[in-house]
Amino acid sequence: MGIRWQKVIYLLLGLGVTAVFALAFVSDPVMVDVAMVARGELQVTVDEDGETRARDRYVISAPVAGRVKRIDLREGDPVRADQVVAEIRPLPLSARERDEQLARITAAQALAREARERARHAAADHEQARRELQRVEKLARDGFVSAQAFERAQVSETTAANEWLALDFHARSAEADARSARAALMAIGGSGLQGAVSLRSPIAGRVFRISERVVAPGAVLMMIGSPEVLEIVLQVLSGEAVKIKPGMPVLIGGWGGSGMLQARVRLVEPFAFTKVSALGVEEQRVNVVADFMESPQDLGDGYRVEARIVLWSGRDVLKVASSALFRRGDDWAVFVMDGRHARLRLVKPGHRAPLETEVLEGLVPGERVIVHPPNDIADGARVRSRR
Image (cartoon, rainbow, N blue to C red):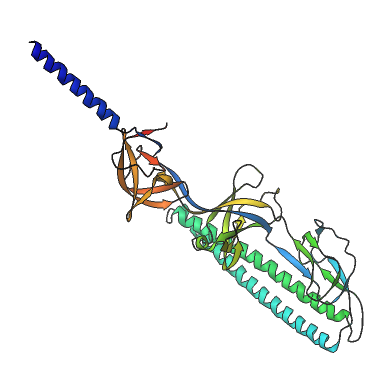
């Protein structure tokens, strides 16, 4: 009986020693951060800083060489359409300079005719877009077309209206340049000074900049614009600009007021330029121009804003934190929390945003995934959430 108890005691001691060694060699669980897989709204955006700009701004330039008379206007002063904003005492013209002035008048008149024809074409396009919107609106009320088709028709009509207004203002500016060139030639005789050349404002607006000095032909004297009609200019990387199309919505924040302002992309300029970043890296960037849906009165020309161009959006999207995804060969994978263990799971991502990514296959709502998974985590590793 004593020997049997001794064997039992030795067996228990052996099991205890084995358990101690097993616990000594079992690693502590890895502390990880987790995020929940859920359904919700997701937007894929291009985020850039930009600035506001008066959409209709005009440069008043000198048609001839001469001395500018004192300009009584100051920056910020309002001006009326066709108001005299500056006068130049021209210098005498030689025969060669007179021929150059005649050629300048001919070129200005040709540009004015071209601009006016483009404005007429834009007006016709806008009228067609307006009629199309009326037809689609009636069909939408009767249930024959979708709400998306009606929204596209609204965007097309708004875009056409903005394009027509921009080209109409451009045509008025070109006609004003042609009138200034003709007035300059009338004011100057072939051998000497005959009078002053009056420069007039093509629109009703405000003075942005003024320059007073002895000027050469073409020198900028003044910039006039309408601060009530603003647009946003964003300098976007060329790799992102190829994804942006006219009509895409733009969310404006960081403008100094409360809430987000609404805008839409009007133009993606067809050429890029080189810009050096703050880190000294040369980047190819493209100007993207957007129009406010409703411009606030507090903003002015040249104000800084933060813009988000919405490339894609969804309302009921299964999404996961982008930081949970990592490459596994040619596939994408995540680590899913299975109790106290990490389980490797292959997934199929869809649209990607900086913070969240759409999941098409591999996950279900309510599962927890490990974000920023450490390199020492493998399938089946023991883990513990920090929260």
